[in-house]
Length: 202
Image 1: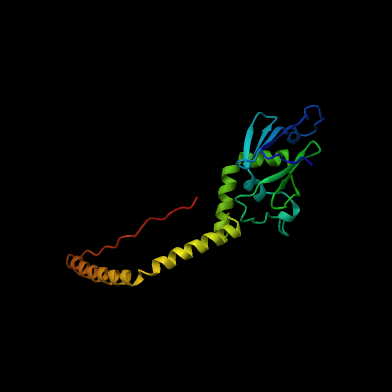
Image 2: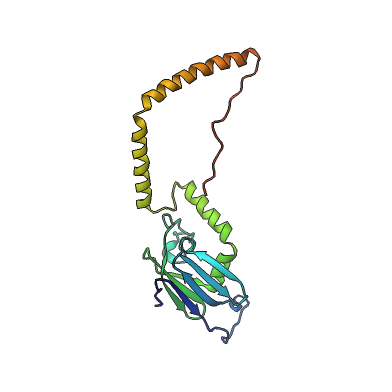
């Protein structure tokens, strides 16, 4: 097993002399480097292309059998925003095994699959985030989400002390609004204004 150092790991492959039989096999990795500081794996291919893969992206698209449901479809993995790699192990001359710090260590990424992930990284990541939202899931780990929820709850309690004053102010504003609405109605024009726009979370 190739264990990653605290800084990074650089793996050079010598696969150019192997005998190939199909067009798909003409693709292989010539260099792999993991940047532990930002948790990004960089892979250079025999085509000269170079792709950067966040560890979260690779974990969410693991080809391991346990990462798929009974129908063979990828399972939705949440809470992996800060996941990292702890090991990189070549598998023969056709793939690499990636070991993650959440104990997932059975993902074998073939060179064509890694290349495909690199080519479609943006669209696949957008779809991943979209699926999380549709299922009410998050990229954040459960513990971090719990701490943020607790912090938000504390802030709400601090604001609750001024609730009565806010209610009185809201009542006054409502009365003023009714008067304004009556004024607008006399002209035959009643309009409503939106409080704010729709925010798209990134």
